[in-house]
Length: 206
Image 1: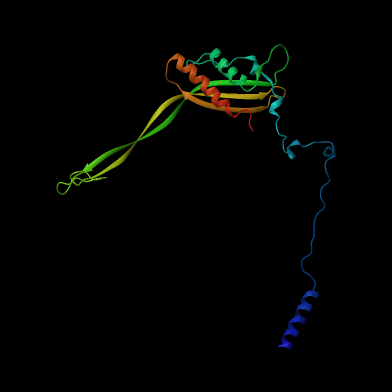
Image 2: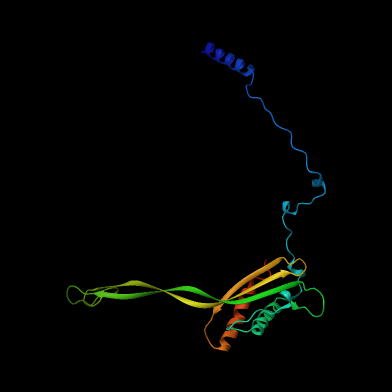
């Protein structure tokens, strides 16, 4: 056994001393372009967190009120959005100058699919007369039910509000909410205000 171990050790030493058939090689890196030293690549760095606290006032995009629809006119939409922004500390710009935020809002009709499930009961009798309890009737029958799923379409009004930085024009935040398109004029006004409030719930983002 000692001789065998000694032979294996010698073979290992001989293998370690044999030349490596693989030779490392590489090509030199190409020289950097001349403008690389003075060019700042903003995409290579994460964007700084946005300071929503610096937004204090706002104005409409292009100075135009939201477009009205047959469901609500332009003034109604503008009033609902203005009230919602006011509750979040954003005031309409007064006088000349650039607003901190530019606001766009639109109202459109969309179709949604709704489903309702109804359980219809049934029962069957067998055997003789029996005053049972629980799922059994007085004739010994067993009650049960089978589901019926009904799918139908409804029309809803979708309110979308978008905010843009007043200086750069970049999108800052947007959200949407929907409400029923049914009801009287008074009901529609209440539904519009509720939808705007729901859309602005997440502003400013945490």
